[in-house]
Every structure is written in C-alpha cells, then in structure tokens.
Amino acid sequence: MQTLLPGIRACVFDAYGTLFDVAAAASHCREELGDRWQPLAELWRTKQLQYTWLRSLMGKHEDFWRITGDALDFAMASLTIRDQTLRTRLLELYLNLDAYPEVPQVLRRLRNSGRRTAILSNGSPRMLAAAVEHAGLASLLDAVISVEEAGIFKPHPSVYRLAEKHLGLPASAMSFQSSNAWDAYAAKDCGFRVIWINRFGQAKERLPGEPDAEIADLSAVPDLLAPL
Image (cartoon, rainbow, N blue to C red; front, top):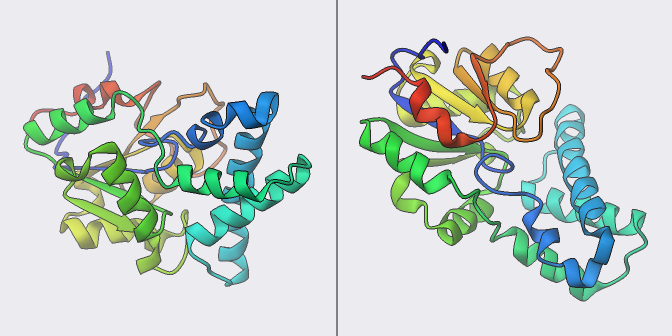
C-alpha cells in the first residue's frame, strides 16, 4: 500500500506536459501535417527543452515564448515543412493548449481538501495566462509562477525556491507534480515531496532526488496526500 504524504499544505504543478498537452497544437493541425504531425510535436518539444537547458548553461536567457518559436522553426526545417501560415497557426494553438481531462477535477478536490494550488513553469507569464484562461483554471489556482522571475530555467534550484516565496511555505510542506522526470527529480532534490506523473511509461532517471510516488496521470494525486 502506498504511504500517504503527510503535512502537504500546497500542491505545485508543472504546466507543460503535466497540466497541458504539449502535443495538442500539432495534433490540431493533422489535416495540414498528415503523418508528420507526431514527429513534429516530438521534435518541437525536444528542442524546446534542449534550448532551455543550453541557454541556461550559456547564460543567454530568453523567455519561453521565444524559445518555443525557435524550437518550432528547427522542427519545421528538419522535416522540410515550409509554410509560414502553418507556423503562425501552430504558435497560436500553443497559447491555447488543451488541458488533460482530469485536471479540473483534481484541482477542485485539492482545493476542497483545504490545500493551495499553484503552477511553477518555464512558461512566460503571457503563455501561462493564456493557457490557464483557455482551460478555465484561473479560479482553481492560488498562484501561477513563471521562471522569468528567476531569469533562468528549470532545473536550476532558484526556480523551485520561487514556490516557497510565493506560497510562504517550506518545500517540505508542498507536493510537486510533474510529468517531466528530470523536473520531478530536481524538485525532490530541492526538498519538495514529489509525485512523478509518468504519462508515457518512461524509465527512471539516473539523477539525484528520487520522487516519492509515481502514477500514470494526475487523477490519483489527492489520494496520495494524508488528511490535513
């Protein structure tokens, strides 16, 4: 039986890939992309993450919207897709990504249990505001925190400390949920209790910070927390 996580007063969520489906923009363009929609979605996401890590190491920070556009340009060039109208549409769709179906109910359950809820994301404030509004989640969140305040991307420790600053709680009193394994491990290494949302059956990372629990989607998160 899974040991319940005690003393969790706030639940902090990664946004992209955890609350919002990062493949949704390309999926909505299947008619134009045909069987290239999934390779495009995967390469776009891979380069997006790579550019955050590389820019952080280089000390050349740009906000996530610029990086998202650069990653899309790389992906389209790699797949020899030359269509500026499609590029514009894909970026517009990325501002309005679909939330995973379980997200609203999970956030409601957590709020009803007396816990605060927040997003901590690489996304720029504009991107996060658009995604939250599109999904109708604003009333279910106490804070939406962007790495722009730290000026560096995850997994830098200064990013995770933003949650402590905004929610006024120590990391040990918060659970952190991410579908990105590297993000989950990094948050654990920074003192959070961590639930890894392993949506795609990935192997465990070889990194510091073993998550406290691993589940397939967000629906089980409230059941893993001990009553307050």
